[in-house]
Image 1 (cartoon, rainbow, N blue to C red):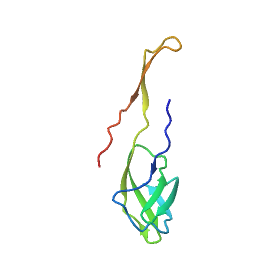
Image 2: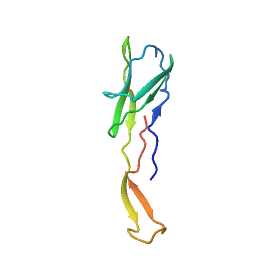
Image 3: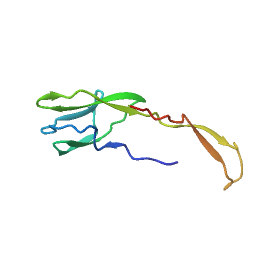
Image 4: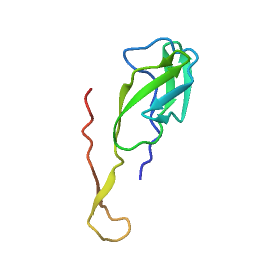
Length: 106
């Protein structure tokens, strides 16, 4: 099984400005696991766990909260089949997963 790191958003296009005094980065209603203000135009945020589907990313400063920028959580792949279903140790087997991901286009 292959494990992947938690995704990290390192920039948003088009670039924003005014990332000074940031108090929160949220994915929907959930705070980012952590965030770092890199510059007045860039924040690095660690994406919190979330269910599959769209979410809006917002940034909060003393001046208020930004409009949401779209972010799409993908569902975790589920084991669909192992073929053949039995066999000796070290024998080759094909493992398939479900769902296959059509990546959203924005």
